[in-house]
Every structure is written in structure tokens, then in C-alpha cells.
Amino acid sequence: MGRWFYVLNGLILAFLLLPVAIVILFALNPEPFIAFPPSGFSLRWYDKFLHSRDFMHAFTLSLELGVGTALLAGCIGTAAALAIARGNIPGSGFLTALFLSPLVLPGLLTGFAMFQLVMVLGIGRSTPVLLAGHTVVAIPYVMRTVLAVLANADRSIEEAARGLGATPATVFREVTLPLIRPGVIAGCMFAFITSFDQFPVSLFLVAPGEETLPIAMFNYLRFDFDGTIAAASTVSIMLAVLLVLAIERTVGLQNSTRL
Amino acid sequence: MAAVAVHGARTLSRSSAWLLLTPALAVFLLFFAVPFLTMATMSVLSGNPMVVPNPRFTARHFERILDDVYYLETLWTTVRLGLSTTILSLLIGYPLALWLARARGRTTRTLLMMAVLAPMMMGLVVRTYAWLAMYSNRGVINGSLAWLGLINDPIQFLGSEAAVVIALAHIYVPFMILTLSGVIARIDTRLEEAARGLGASSAAAFLQVTLPLSMPGILAGSLLVFALAISAYVTPIVIGNYNIQTLPMLVYQQISSSFNLGFAAALGIVLLVVALVLVAAYNRAMARAPGAA
Image (cartoon, rainbow over all chains, first blue to last red; front, side):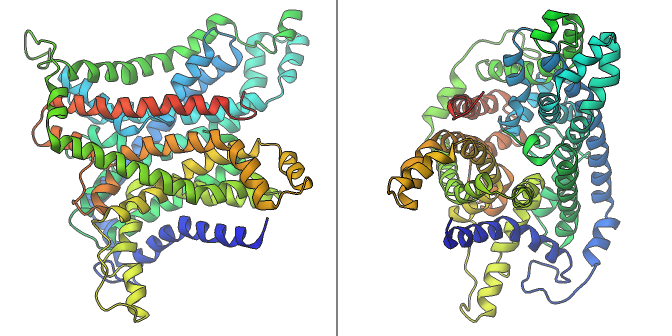
């Protein structure tokens, strides 16, 4: 492929990555509004972020929701992926499509539909409802990575264990579970970040006074453009970079992102 | 024993498989299927059946959408933003997807995947703020132009549709790239080599062989980006500077200010129907892609 092809792609990569890199720069810019080029170096926005009660409350809630979602979606998604890949049940194609559908269906609609249900039932919005919403959209990430490792795993190992006289339960515990472990770990990380960064599903489901970090950041952005948002954003940026590196090391990026 | 070997490792009995599926089925029934059914029902009911004793079926919410130019204009703005975002994502995404699919070295491929995926994993608010920092009156673009002495007064980017479309394309182009590169990677490179061997130029070989064969990927990626772009909320609000009105904003206003659950449900159904048609078409396109299972 010619030189222009690489020049063009270099520009596209810059378009993808530069705006995000700029955010890190603005978090360190002492100006009280968006101003470029930066006038100096300061940690005042990190200080403000770390000492804001609202942001810290939202940050803690988002961390808790992320861990809760990763645990719930991790267990539920792994169990379902095992059943589909190794259970030989009828309609597994339909079930896979159903469980993976939140990946392509806009999250705003999933959140809004759940909002309709809790309003009609008179339950109202609450953090458990939000956790349920996050879990629904996180399950497909776990299923996808676990299904990917199961598809790549050599079935003859499981068959050999059976042939040597192991009971199905032993094979499952001693062979299948260790095989899928990287997929489960990668899936849980995906689930965590899906919840931690979640905006569309949360928009309709956050309980008043119980805002998550992305919602708190959005609300802040309506009135204030100072570097506090940039400082808060670095958390999300660093998590994304860590996640990508970790997934490459566990199951490989190619395996876990097929849409 | 023989049967097991033939059918592959059926390490789970059917009953334990159903047992493992139960939690996922329960979650999807309660928090996915039932909510969407509720929304569909509410969109054609005259009131909340838990509050009003005898709600009737009515089409009045949908009639209200169709009768009011304001709602139709909002719908058109939403679709227009979605279309522009899709076209721009395709133009930006195709070259990178081609590189990702054809890169020989494993390191190159991994680094490219990271460059595409890392921004995709960042929060929507983070990426929207990034564009706010680009577009603001003293932001990166205006600041650089002023520093170079090219402008005296800042260019007003915020509030324009073009600014929203570029930001949305930045946010959703990873979905386009992943879909496209998956399809392009499965195209047999020998076909293009054969075309060149028969005397076609590189450009002609690409235009007449690779591009047509990647059509299912183009279609699938476009449908996905369109579905995501029409349901975007944060970016059109913030980058649109509260100038631009889209369908998701309308849904939110209905429940936050007027609290009309039924009408909001009808607006949600309009968005859902558009998204579902697109997602179904996406699945069909992916099923027809070369080398699809």
C-alpha cells in the first residue's frame, strides 16, 4: 500500500487520539475556563475534584456500581455462555442473539424502557434499579469474551478427561473452568468499565441525589467549563487504557471485540 | 461415549445447562423484555393502568407526533444528524479498517486495535468534553488559529450541526472500524492480487474487487453507527449548545418537565422502531458477509 495510505491513516489516528490527549492537558491548565494554549501547570483541578463532596460521592457510587455490575454480570454471563457453548440446548442461536442484543441496541432505549416499568409499577428510580439496568447491558460483554475463549478452547482436552474416567462435574471443575478463566476476567473488566462510564442507561434511572460520576460530570458541564471535568475525565481515560492493556494480555483484543 | 465424541464435548447435561441459563433468562425477562413491553403498552394507553382504573387503548400519542410540525422537524433533525454522522464515520473509518485488516505484523495490529479501542472505552461525557475543549471560543482550534495570527475573533463552532456531526463521528467511528475490519479481513487477498496480475492498477483492483466485497461490512457498520447516533444525548446537547433539538432530548423533556409518560413512551417507540429495523438489517448484513458462520 502506498505512502498516501499511511499519511491518511496517520491523520485519522491523530483525529481519534488527539482530542482525548487534549483533555489531560486541560486538567493541568490553571485557567478557570477552556483556554488554549495552556498558561502554566497546576494541580488545582485535581485538588478541587478530590475535595468536592458531590464528585467524591458520585465517584464512590460509580465504583460500587461498577464492582456490583462486574460481579453480577460476571456470574450470570459466564453461566449463560457455558450453557450455550457446552450445553447443546435447542434455540441457542436465538438465545445468543437475545443476550448479545444490548451491544447494538442503544442504551438510552434500554434505560428508558426500564424507567417506564418502574414508573408504571410505582417503584420509582433507585440505585438497585440502576444496578439492574447496568447488569443487563454488561452481561453481553461477559458472554462475548467467555464465548470467544470457549470457541477457541480445545475440546479434546475435555473429551480426554471424560475418556480417562472423570465425571462431568469433575471435568467442569478441573478442566472447563480453568480454561475460561481469562475470558471471565476480561469480561468482568469490560462489565466494570461499561458500568463505571455508563451514561445512556443511567440518564433515566439515577435516583435524585444519587448521581453517578458520568451524570454528575454532565450536570456540572451545564454550568461550569473549568478543569474539574478534565480532572474527573482522567480517571475514565486511565481506566480505558488499563482495560485495553489488560484485555490484550488475557484474551487478546481481536477475540473480545468482535461485534 | 461415541456419541459424545461425535457431537463434540457435551460436558453439561441439558438440565444443568438450563439451570445455568436461568439467571440470565430471568434478568433479561424482568429488566429487558418486560420494560420494552411496558413502554409499548404505555404508548397506546390513555393512562397509567396502575393509577387510572379503566385506561382505554388510544392512538392519540402517535397522532400528536404526526400532527405537529415541531415533532416531525425534530425527527428530521435527528435522522439528518444520524445520516451525516454515518457518512463521515464511513469515510474516516474505512482507511483505518483496511489497514487494521491487512496489517501483517502482530504488533502493528495490536497497537492499531488499542488506538481504536481505548477511546471507545472512555465515557461519553469525557469525549464530549474533549470536543468542547476543541471548539470553545478559546479552545484548541480557535486558540491555535489566534496564536498563528490567522483570526482576530473566534469562530463560533459550538451550536452548529457540523460541529455536532464531527464530534459524534469521533465517538462512534470505532464501531464502524471494528465492523468493517472484521469483514475486510475475511476477504481473500488473492482476489485482489489476481486482478493486479491481470493488469489492473492498485486503485482499480481496490475499487473493483475489495470495495464491492466489503459492502456487507459497509452496510452493517453504517446501520450500527446510525442507530447509535440517533439515540445520542450528551453530545448534541453540549456541542449543539442547546440549539439543536433531537428525539432523545424530547423524550427526556417529556418525563422531566411535563411528565407525560404515555407520550414519552410513544416517542421512545418511534426511536425504538427505527433502531430495531436498523439492528435487524445489521444482523442480516453480517450474516451475508464473506466467511460468516
